[in-house]
Length: 264
Length: 279
Image 1 (cartoon, rainbow over the protein chains, first blue to last red):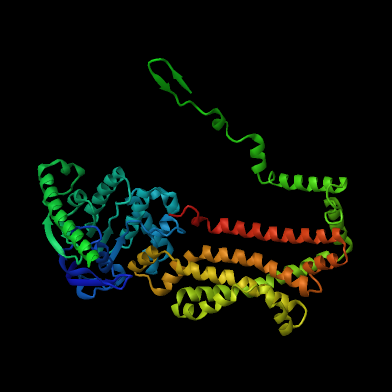
Image 2: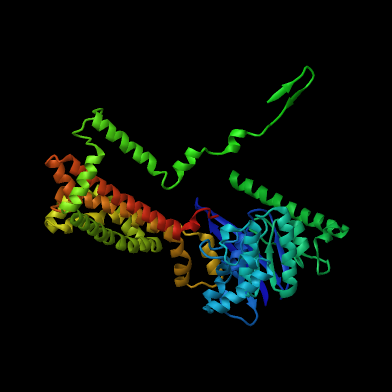
């Protein structure tokens, strides 16, 4: 499944009635099986972009094209949410099976599939626990298991590891890489972390401030399979510095635009 | 906790023996389910003593033991049980009459902005009216007997459930609905699997309030317009100044209220425990 984002724009009207141009003519292509990380200044419209990719809101202009074999819109993408968005009154396994349940799959079959994804994420023992009984890291593992269980064409991840502590984040990153090596799903991964992006991605897209568009499309050269050790190499340091400079420029520009907006 | 010499000071944090010992045995006994009866029994004993010795006026506060005797007497020789049955029936009918449409109206208002815009102003005007004030009107419409009392209880118990049902639907977790939509949920699935289950705790909280108000409405109706029922008995015993009998019927009403609160709380803990500590 190839994804072509073709000049999409999106505007909102803020509560005061002013138009807010969030996404401005963004164009990008994502190849089948590619792991793409997206970084950009805070509030630049990354989540809006993800919402459009996830079919939750239509673009005002342009189009997003999924070229492949499947047609059901509910099977194109699965989002892994920053706050995991698990249903509190369902057990973990019923949460993971939720997407399959929506498609009308029988109880036994969907539970089997859900259980196997729980095992993959290392939380098979917690199938019957409620989300609120689990730690933040385990909830996010369940969130990833749910997204994988729906077997989407594209996995969309919205800063999935931002809310967990640093040690757990490192573990989750390595687990995600290990799972991805096996499935090789197309992944669009939004993050604040430059190092996280370099560790995970085949390509890093740097976005500008609002109205956001791609200002840098960087191919990450590190061979796979990768571990966190690549962060020690000089090449990693150089790329990190380079990305930080691009991000800093974009963030500064976004901040200035914000202040000018406030002044007018 | 500090030892000082001429040259330096040492500050020591040492174990807090009192805190380590934890709550005392008396405190633990009192906080057990049966132990919580102790303060009630002590209060009744003090009342008994005060009434017998003459610290408090026996005419208004007869000894609890006399009231209990009166209660037993009313059960064995009077028609107390029949009247309890009548009252319970009215409470249940009134409750159902109010709560069933309230859930439907509340959910509809939560789901359809149009229903909200039309119905909300009407509820806002009717809700603050003390429903007991409507009793004369109900008597005009329905005559005497059980019907106006049941309708009064129905009107009173309608509002909390309607308002809570609407709020429960409106406050649905947007993250969950977005998650479900992303996974291809239809509108019906969204409603049945996410929005309504998420609204249930709020709806049930409204139903709990309504249950208490249904009892209130029935007792008030029986005071003013009933020829039978436990509230009517209380009123009659007051009028003929049989104070111990009056207390006996009050105890029955208190027991009804207590049962209602306890049962509904149990249901809430049993089925909606996921709302506690939800993140």
